Image (cartoon, rainbow over all chains, first blue to last red; front, side):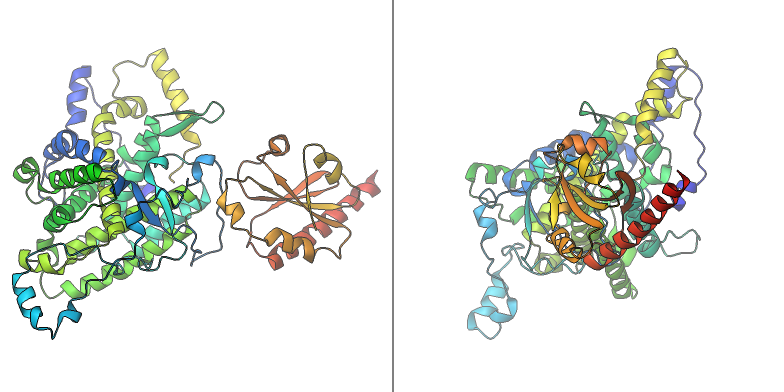
Length: 435
Length: 121
C-alpha cells in the first residue's frame, strides 16, 4: 500500500521528560484540516462531554442491537474467508432477545398518499415535526438493500466488541488495497478539488480508527488468552503517519457534524424497545449528544459541508461520491473475518448515513422535512461516532506513552528495562500487520 | 463418502499405502465452515469411483490433538496427505469441480514422486 511507503521522519525530542511530554501533547495543534475546530478543543470536548455520553448511549437497548447481512457473497473475488481465533466469530443474538418492536414491520410514511386528500393541505401546513416514524427506504450510499430483511442477522454489539481478531495477511490487505486503489485515490496534486479528497480522508480516518481499536484491545498472548494494549502497533499503524491521525480527527468531526445537523430528527425520534426506563434514558442521552450547549459553544460547526458542495457541481459530485462509496460498501462482503465484516458494515453504514444527512438539501427548513432515516442507520451512525470518539480519546491519551516506547528517541534513557519492553512489544507486533 | 477422523484413527488412516487423503479441518463455531454446506459430502460422492483418494474431515473442536499435531491454525483448512505425509493445502474456489481437479492433480504428482522415491531405495 502506497501509504506504507511514504517517507516519514520520526521527530526527535531532546531535553527533560516534561518538555518532551509537552511537545508530544502539542503535536497536533491548530485547526483540523477542512474543519472548523482545533485539535485542543476537539480533545477537550470529546474527553469531557462526548465520550462519556456516547459510552452510555451505546449500552442502551436501542443502540445495542444491530441488524446486518453477514453472509452475502463477495462480488469481486472468490470467497477465501477463514476463522483463526474464536473471537473472529460473531455471537449472534437469538431472535427472542432482539427488541420485539424492532421486528414489527414499519408502516411506511408516504407523503404521496396524502396528496388529493382534503386533510393533506391542512396536515402539511401544520406539521412541523422532523421525525415521522422510522422509514424503510434503502440507503443510496450503501450496496446492501436495507429494506430487504432476508438473511439478516441480529447482533448484540456489546457481546461482539471490535478488537484484534487475528485477521491479517494477504486477505486483509486486499480489502484495504481494493478500497484505496479502486475507489478512493489520493489526490496528490495541489490543484485537485477539495471535494474529491473528502472520501479518501473519511476512509483513511475510518481505517485509522479501526487500527486504534485493534491496538487498544490486542491479543498479547494467544496461549494464555492475555489481552491488552499494543502501543507499538498503535505507533506503527497510526501515530507515525501524521495524515492518518489528522484524518481520524477529520472523520470524527464529519460524523459529529452529521449528528448535530440531524439534531431535530434525532431529538424527536422514538427510541422504543419496550423498556420504558431505558428508552427514556436513551432519548435523554441522544438529546445531550446532539444538543450539548458546550459543544455548540466551543465547536458550533465541526465541519462546514456548505462550503464544499454548494454550487452547480453539487448534484454531479453527489452522484460520483455515491457511486464510489457504494463500491466501498460492497467490498465489505469480501472481508474474510466475520467480526471484522460486522464492524466494517456497521461503520460503513454509519458513514453512509452521515453522508446521507449532510447531502440532504441544505437549509434548516428543508432538512426538517426531507430527512428520513432508518432505525438501523441511526444505530450505525451513533455506534460509529462512539468508535471514532474512543479512537480520538485513545490517540490523545496514549500518544505520549506510545511515542516513548515505539518512537525510541523520546525517552531520555535507553535503559535495560526500556529495551526489554520495546523488544517484547515489537515481538508481539510482528504478527500484527496492517489489517 | 466422507470419513470422520479422530485422534484414534487419524494417523493410521492417512498412512494407508498409495492412498491420498483430502481432509477438511473445521470447528463448530466457525461460520465459514458452516457456509460450506454440503460441499464436502458432494465432493465425497464425486470421488467415490477413485480408490486411491479418500475424503475425510476433522472436527478440531472435539479432536483438538489432531489439529495441533498437523498445525492447523485457521478454519476451514483443506489439506492433502499422501502416504502419511502432508502434500499441500487447497486455497482455491470452494466448489466441487475445483476441489476435485486439485485433488486429482496433486495426487498424481504425489504418486509419481512416491514411485520415484521407491526406485531410489
